[in-house]
Length: 398
Image (cartoon, rainbow, N blue to C red; front, side, top):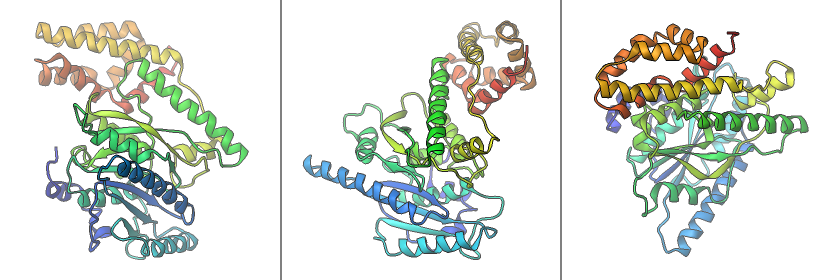
């Protein structure tokens, strides 16, 4: 676990340093971090939505005679050298505009000019990481500062900052949260076809989440970038944002969940509202799903109910074996595998392919005195990615 800004900077920020070198740090409590490429002037609507929520928050603080948290905005304007001149010009215009904003609250990061643009192998992950890492440095790396992921096409509820402040800083909290997610609903301001697809896709995401939760998987949260919020301390503890070209929110959410628990990871009662637009920015995700559905290369499809039944039974089995193994002082690997075989021969085949026998023996060795620690270690191994891989394995015919 990373305990200091110096350690995080040394271990995790080498790729980011050239983009933020010489930039004056911001001083605030809540940092909204936005990657932007070819987003002018749409991003102005996002900023307008955020500032409206900030004004609402400050008004509530004034009515309650409370000092509001200072909110800052970090916007990473980025592109690759190979992007078109049109995109580069759009980015230059946005950077110029951001320079005219209040520099005590706004910081535009130049990751788009010649000699400063991102490499051809980088994309959404690094774009988001640059903004978040700069905000982390500005925050002082403490649990008293928040980093909020946001997208340049996303609006927020008027009570967004009120809900965030209440969720993380309310004086009545018994346990201060380390991270969490807001709710979400996509706007229906696209074409009729885009709107129709996003309604179906959003329903699929939430249905999938509900089924995972019913199966008692801790990985049931929907991975959607602008819903993610964490303390600066937790950001470093989980290793910070990754550099995945796409799916960076999926991996970041997974890292946050592994660094927290059911008491310190929360659902924040407010919503963000992404656009339903087609997107070329990433090869998969919401925008790509809409594009793929339109051109016939992607089909919105639920996993079978039987797959969730297998998942639920497997998780229940892991919990039962964890309790018995600690109580008996033995890993009970043979019993674990035999009972998994009875749940599903495809599950058993999946576990063999994943070398679960070696994994389980190591997990038991490291956690043999605490059943809760052993079961949690199981979940850290059988994470979101493993769950999806199991579902794909279960799609084969038994």
